[in-house]
Image (cartoon, rainbow, N blue to C red; front, side, top):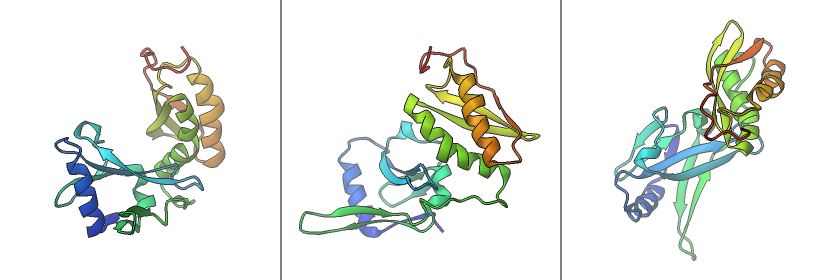
Length: 194
């Protein structure tokens, strides 16, 4: 059972679009921005072979491949991509009824809770500086994190870690006692604040 349904009409439409890109191996990537929040947006984008994420779920169709963003999977349950023709040619639609629903509760695994708040509250804020943070591990109630993008090497990373990320995670998840950064901040090429 696939996490998402792409109807035959949508497959035909997407295969035609992809064939016009002159890029061997191009497919589509489906993901949700700010999943589990009122601001969730379901997105479908071209995915060139070098844009693929090895953690994505891969769904092979007759004429193309779809890569499904792993953190988005729980929010894409019952999602349908469809294409319907009309007077103007047609329209591709994506309906994801679970995109805005929180997918964690008090019984969820600790890692899922931390990833949920990283995706829904922390990373949307860091994105304004071109950055993000990801969970590496949890060790005795300490969330071990790695910064990327504009946050790697940023002069404000310690402040962001303690005042923003740690505060948010500790308030939302009582089992989390603190956070630790394992990023190599000596690489500063993309840092938001030098």
